[in-house]
Length: 101
Image 1 (spheres, helix red, strand yellow):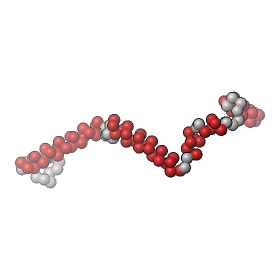
Image 2 (cartoon, rainbow, N blue to C red; image 1 turned 90 degrees about the vertical axis):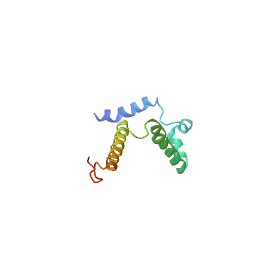
Image 3 (tube, rainbow, N blue to C red; image 1 turned 135 degrees about the horizontal axis):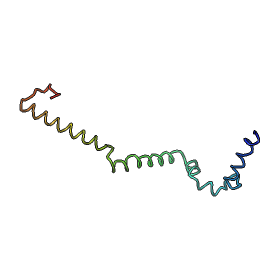
Image 4 (tube, rainbow, N blue to C red; image 1 turned 135 degrees about the vertical axis):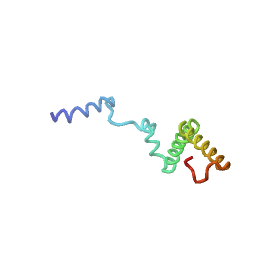
């Protein structure tokens, strides 16, 4: 039983990597992990911030404006009701403190 535990995983690893135990430097330099770790700290932070800004603000702002349709309709309804209340208060139908009417 223990022979399976210690023998099978390394064989599977060698089969997965086609018999190679390490990567050549040329392949290693092409990976994103190498590029991230080889850059100075500030460049990596700026690159990540730029990617995050693009995802959050450029795509979403253009598509939905950060607001769902129901929220837009709700705000329009509230604005309409507030205008109606203001008109009724101006006509003297209700007092200013009767906000529920």
